[in-house]
Length: 203
Image (cartoon, rainbow, N blue to C red; front, side, top):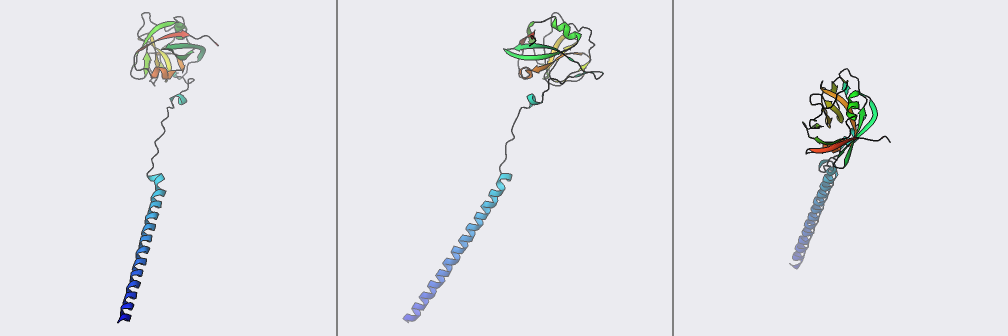
């Protein structure tokens, strides 16, 4: 009787050991599966879950070319004279390279021009208020297709404007020059402002 009880006890102990070993094996497999799943997600994460913010760059200064000019109706372009003007706004300077034409000659005779009042027009240009004494157009025939950065006379008002945005061809425009540096100063002005326009001494 005691022998049978010992055998039963041994058999139960054996069954319990097998059950414990089976449970440990299942736990190990489960852990391994979870580990593999984690690795799989981790490998995919750089492409699927990590989104890089685009780098915002202001390439206006990089793409702006002060040597590029607009064109007359016949496709010809103005030539630079080598003369430069300084437009001073709140202590900051805008340098303008002038073209070689009679309209520019007439403008130079009026310099320096102080307390020029500028305002924004259509979000693309900064014209000056109409002058009591209109600017002379010289012998230049109007008609011009300006590019960003150009200074032109607007024939009906006989004043000038500086484009900080692109504009279409107009028979009422006469080219004066091109902003060489400081166009961002003009484009950043959200309110009316005043400036002084004067001849720069040759270096």
